[in-house]
Amino acid sequence: AQSVTQLDSQVPVFEEAPVELRCNYSSSVSVYLFWYVQYPNQGLQLLLKYLSGSTLVKGINGFEAEFNKSQTSFHLRKPSVHISDTAEYFCAVSDRNSGYALNFGKGTSLLVTP
Amino acid sequence: DTAVSQTPKYLVTQMGNDKSIKCEQNLGHDTMYWYKQDSKKFLKIMFSYNNKELIINETVPNRFSPKSPDKAHLNLHINSLELGDSAVYFCASVDRTNNSPLHFGNGTRLTVT
Image 1 (cartoon, each protein chain N blue to C red):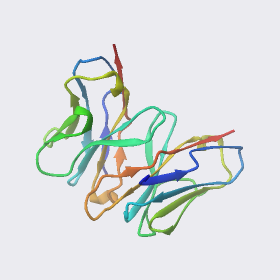
Image 2 (cartoon, chains in turn brown, red):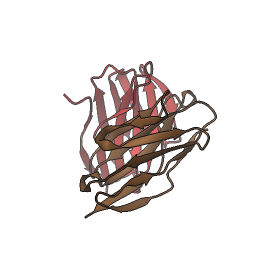
Image 3 (cartoon, each protein chain N blue to C red):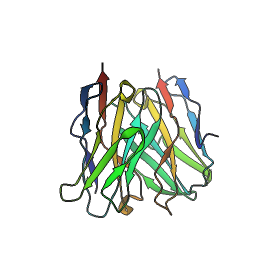
Image 4 (cartoon, rainbow over the protein chains, first blue to last red):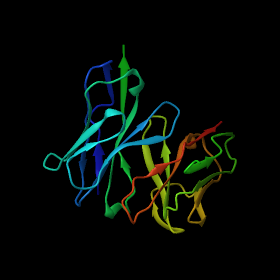
């Protein structure tokens, strides 16, 4: 069975500072990895995904993530955050054994302050 | 055009009632899902249908019954609503043949009083 662990439930950061949101996964087969963002009272929006190929994945809004198979990690990074990046961020994994359904981590709340 | 649309957006009802949430996708995807997001923001899959066939049925009370009349629609019917059913329910769809990411609806906030 697969699982996803987001190590930080809350990450406070000042505007224009860099940020890293951590995600580790476990799975017995090849996985697909995703980061979604949820703004307050809204649905989920895909930030980026890793299916195969280059381990450094670039997404929307200046975010990127790196797939590290040996460390089973898929950490999300942004070099300089904005107030508007304040949201809930979810890491998710899927594989063929799960019917390609997404299994989500518990989320990390990013709070950007001036 | 909204790709995955859910109705209603908000649903307030009393304990013991029966209610339905509807979901439609116009993306031509072959697989649809229902997820539940609890008060702590945790997202948990409930059901999945592929071409109208149930393929995932997680541990969910049998008061919850999904119905897929065609591959573009997946409705969720809930009988005898309980306080603990209060949550945001998200519909999602995907094309499993091309590894596309899930597309989510905007959610239905269910409040049981």
